[in-house]
Length: 161
Image 1 (spheres, helix red, strand yellow):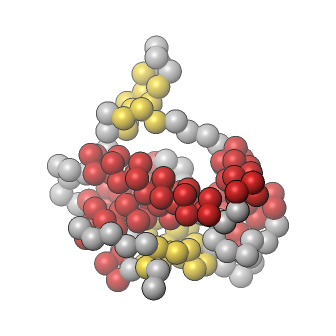
Image 2 (cartoon, helix red, strand yellow):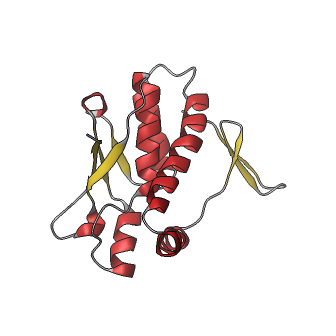
Image 3 (tube, one colour):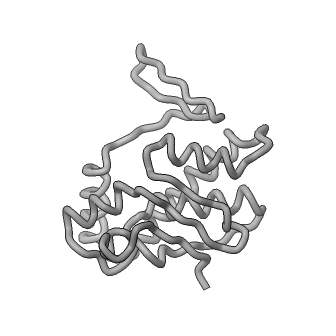
């Protein structure tokens, strides 16, 4: 399992030796919306790219000596409070996130979304794919709870074609 160290004296959390910062889903939802409202849809690409970069570094480090990288990557996602990640079909270019409180928060705060809103998860999945396959692919969120929680029970990410 990935090493999470909490140093209460310094007030920091280390994951794989790297300092980490967490914000609640409310803060992140408003930050993401503010950036997209101010700078347009190009911020979607920027946010996914940043997530991919930081997660590629973190996951690469914490999984380097792990036998079952897929299981470890799924567990870290859950431990970060992002939902339940299913990478069982990642090599076929598909990942599923259940219980995305982030997607639900986007829906309840801003109403039905036109597209996927799980940008951090998207970058995380892109990083996971690269670690597990050795190739880089872009994913797109084709189904998101934030698009209509009565219609969609989970968020689905697929390789961008």
